[in-house]
Amino acid sequence: MSKKINLFAILVLALMVMFTVSCEGPAGEDGAAGAAGANGTDGVDGVDGNVSCLTCHTQDNMDSVNGLFALSGHSAGNYVGYAGGRGSCARCHSSEGFMDYLAGYGGENIAYPSAWSCGTCHGNHGSLEEGISAPLQTSAAVTMIEDGTVVDFGSASNLCANCHQSRRGYAYYEAIDSVWTDDVNGNDSLDFVVPDGSVYINSSHAGPHHGPQTNTLKGMSGYGASSEGTHTSVGCVSCHMGDATATEGGHSFVPNLENCTVACHSTVTDIAAYLTEKQDAVSVRLTAIADALVTAGALAEEDGEYHPHVGVVTEDEFKAFWNYMVVYEDHSHGVHNPGYFNTLLTGAEFNLGLD
Ligand code: HEC
Ligand code: HEC
Ligand code: HEC
Ligand code: HEC
Ligand code: HEC
Image (tube, rainbow, N blue to C red):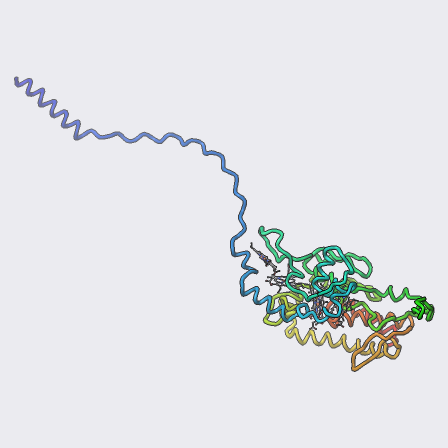
């Protein structure tokens, strides 16, 4: 009996020891992870949302562009009524004429021509992918009317070059060797022969009509050779449309002189005075040349304004006349290409015996 009790006691004891002392062993180590699957193809990047569109399309920015544009000659279109509908003038003098020209037509008369608006220069975005820029009707290289040279600023300035170029070179005038008029019967009758060594100025509008800025920037159109000026690489847009104030730069097309000092002329302290000084020096030379051309019969003076005068002049006088007209019609008073203008003015002074 006591043996049974003892065995029972030992069993109870053993169970108690087992339940109090024993515990779970540590967990085994994790097995090795399976190999990762291959990466999927990246999705196409989306256009950055509003941010890039709103660089331009905020109401504030568009209001500012509209305000500046309203100040510009393009917006006024002073000569649209006079020249905007006429076949040979319309490509440069009205919005419709320019559209026609870009579409490959030429010389159409336009019944209701209008001035430049946003759509004259801007089309619609070809794409809204990254790097969106203002859509332009054209920024292709331009074939010059005067002699077929192809000019390429490699920038939006090509747009301007379509219109701001001479539409007639000196070769046209050099080629006039006789002058004829219709008689009452509709037959041509010979007025006179232009003598050798002379040139006939056949119109009071003679010259590299009326905005030869692309030619002058490229050192073309006058008598006298020159390399391209430093300003050529700048193109029209950086100078005429750079950062804007309330009245200058941007779509006013009036150069904001601040941009000259920021971008290049950093050592000039008073850029307006600097510009005036340079322009005045050119104007003084132009006036002296103009007075000598009046004496030669190539220009006529009326109320302090000089106009081409119809008549026969010597070749030297014609060359001086032509160089004068190129510098004058450029309308920057020497800014666009100082080195080239100096060559043209020096040549004119020499031909008129002014130097
Ligand atoms: C660098 C400036 C610029 C940026 C950036 C820009 N745009 Fe434009 N967008 C213009 C100009 C300039 C026009 C032509 C305006 C005109 O003719 O009135 C235009 C025209 C448009 C037109 C046609 C409007 C009309 O009245 O015909 C639409 C639509 C348009 N943009 C949408 C967008 C969207 C969407 C984005 C962004 C993904 C964008 N634009 C980014 C400058 C910009
Ligand atoms: C479709 C032809 C055409 C295009 C394109 C054109 N212009 Fe003009 N621009 C003219 C004509 C014509 C005038 C004279 C406007 C008038 O008063 O009727 C003029 C006037 C100007 C003036 C005189 C100042 C003023 O506002 O009165 C400046 C400066 C000028 N343009 C710069 C430019 C620049 C820079 C570009 C390119 C961004 C350009 N133009 C594109 C034809 C054009
Ligand atoms: C190749 C482009 C082009 C053609 C073609 C053209 N013009 Fe112009 N014209 C201009 C530009 C650009 C100006 C503005 C120049 C400036 O402000 O410097 C201008 C200015 C004028 C002016 C103002 C003159 C002045 O002294 O300010 C008159 C007037 C004019 N043009 C009439 C005509 C007539 C008429 C025809 C057709 C027989 C014609 N244009 C053909 C580009 C052209
Ligand atoms: C004579 C041509 C011409 C006309 C007219 C014109 N633009 Fe522009 N515009 C340009 C050129 C050139 C640029 C600069 C493009 C570049 O540098 O790539 C430009 C740039 C712009 C830009 C982007 C830069 C900025 O200033 O925010 C906007 C927006 C714009 N134009 C809107 C307009 C609107 C709106 C109108 C009508 C009120 C208009 N433009 C009329 C030639 C023109
Ligand atoms: C280096 C800067 C610069 C470049 C590049 C430039 N211009 Fe000018 N432009 C000027 C300055 C400065 C004036 C003189 C403004 C003044 O006298 O108030 C001027 C004058 C003009 C004028 C006469 C403005 C008027 O009120 O009669 C026209 C038109 C013109 N530029 C068009 C152009 C065209 C088109 C191009 C490109 C083929 C061009 N410019 C390139 C700075 C520049």
